[in-house]
Length: 75
Image (cartoon, rainbow, N blue to C red; front, side, top):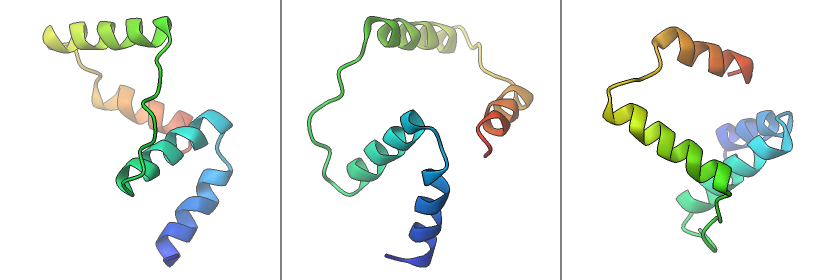
């Protein structure tokens, strides 16, 4: 394992379990071991549909809103 990957794993260990699972899915996908597709809940499907509708209208988060989300998660 490279030093950078080791550092990333150590930082990820401090995150909540759901964030760790998200990171794990991304790493597995990048490594070519995607496994079975993730089933979305009705709430997740609705959130995605709402996001797509907002994007179609050109409604995007401001830079400040994006920074606030990153800061909320310690990033």
